[in-house]
Amino acid sequence: MPTKAQTTAAIARLAELRSSMKKHKIEGLVLTDLPSIRYLFGYSGSMGMAIVGKKNVHFFTNDLYAVQVHEETYKHAGMVIHVDRDFWGTAAKAGLGAKMKIIGFDPNTTNLTAFKTMKKGLAGAKLVEVPDLVSPITQIKTRTEITSISKAAQIVSTAYERMLGMVKPGMTEHQVATFLAATTRELGSERDAFDIIVVAGKRSAMPHGRATKTALKKGDVVTVDFGACVDGLYSDMTRTFSIGIPSKKVVDVFAVLYDAHLTALDTAKAGITAAKLDHAARFIIERAGYGEYFRHSLGHGLGYEVHEHPRVSYANKSGVIQEGSVITIEPGIYLPGAFGMRIEDDVVIRKSGCDILTTAPRELVVV
Image (tube, rainbow, N blue to C red; front, side):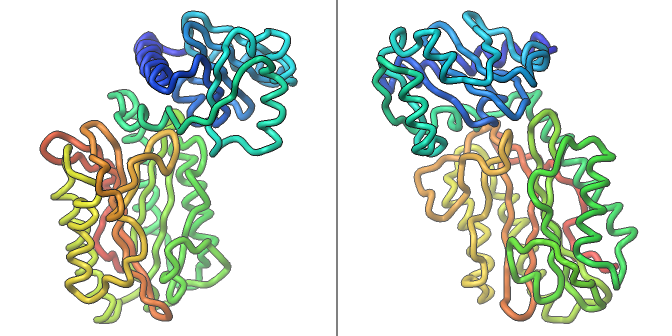
């Protein structure tokens, strides 16, 4: 059952969402994406939908979650829970379209088929497209949420250190990924944050390559990127290590990457723009001649989804990093046909700096 503190925080979030709904001049809002639903209502099932009104919430799930929905869901005022497999048929019977004349929905989470069904279920209402109204609210994390992300970060940190103690030449990328998945579960993760990335040798030049049956061999640079989940909140960590003594080229490039990473950590604080934070790391890499090989943004927001706002990118000149937000800092250098490397940490943004949640060694560990 939700704690009093969780319920109080959820009530504040819902009030903020309704304030945003008012600004967009809508009387109701359809929510179908599960991360937003868990954030607002505490429900962790895989089938659910909510229609938020000015003073009530109609929550829909099917009979597979009849017990779970009552155990998990925050007790908002005016909350009506509908347990029925026909969500939109139930909405039509409740006459929600007539009660809420203008209802918003996010087109990014609603395909054409879903829209047609929704339109029928909310007959009588005007349906209007609105931007994602929940994500801006999720950026600033509560103390409880930060605690959960911190636990998830500690899980991946511990799993990585255990992996360093058992990995050896001849093991496959897939075996390493399997070990990390099993270890994070053993340590308390609810699920993998995403498909675990393990790339070795020349394959490490692929930023998002998936683990294969490729065997690790001496001299390989290996990059692992994985995350854990605690209370529906995610961690996301990347580390690069070496099988045997690395080449001078690898050591030199890693020194550049490490410098860029530490510079970004030292620069991160509340009030800085996303573009300026990205530039802090990118400048170091560009100065060393590897700018074209840093092929992605510096980082992203982290929480109920692995990728949340803000996008920590050179292109996000107006986005301001807010105090209490959790972001990743993950510069990378990828040399096609040779090797690639990335270091990623999860940090909580504070007024004058940041707290680093991921604690595993960032150095180029040799195993």
